Amino acid sequence: MNIAIDGPSGSGKSTLARNLAKRFGLVYIDTGALYRTVGLHVRNLDISSDDREGIIESLKTINIKMTLENGGNAVYLNGKKVGDEIRTPVASVYASQVSKIPEVRRFLLDIQRETAKHNDCVMDGRDIGTVILPEADVKIFLYATDEDRALRRYNELIQKGEKVTLEEINRDMIWRDQNDKNRNIAPAVPAPDAIILNNSGFEENQTLEKAAEIIEEALNKRNQGI
Image (cartoon, rainbow, N blue to C red; front, side, top):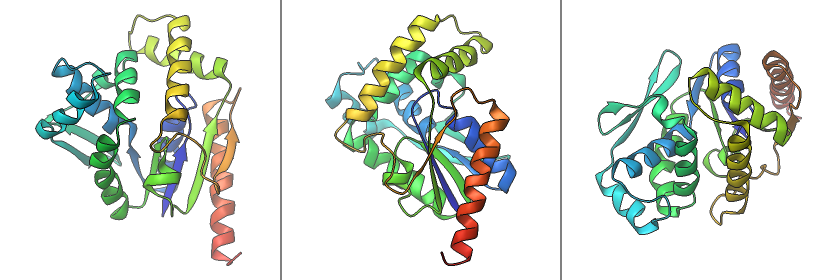
């Protein structure tokens, strides 16, 4: 069984995907970590996030491996496991920029599909239901108000010790939303058959319970041939 969770930054899709994986006994696959890792590689080479040709050239010197660890996944960049360095606001900007480049998306596509092919999984990202897993058993598009999303992201970074302001987070989030929605390749939009879930004002457990209901109902219909 494959479940696709899509949505904009700060919507809570990664948290939801992890919780659903635990609830249904599935593997959680964080595709955003792959783009963030490419962005980290580009930064390590002192290549600008706007340098399209430089980013494409950098793919020749990158080796990304995703492994399954404790029901989740770990990403290795050229043999070294990556951590919170791919979760900073700067990393988000780089991830959004590299994700616009078709060569980068093709480079990562096989990694994502191959992992899902061999595992019952929950995969979250921005184009899972439309591009990566168009045949997923259940597709959910998660979103919330700009204010809710910015505050969630702010609290997440503060808890990690990052020095950021809510204004900075909100500005970066609006920029990334527009960037992701308007890119020519695999824009971040709901799949036609995705179920839209607005979790504005929801606590983490409320989002989980609502999504679990959606999944159980969809699977029951499938089993009944509806």
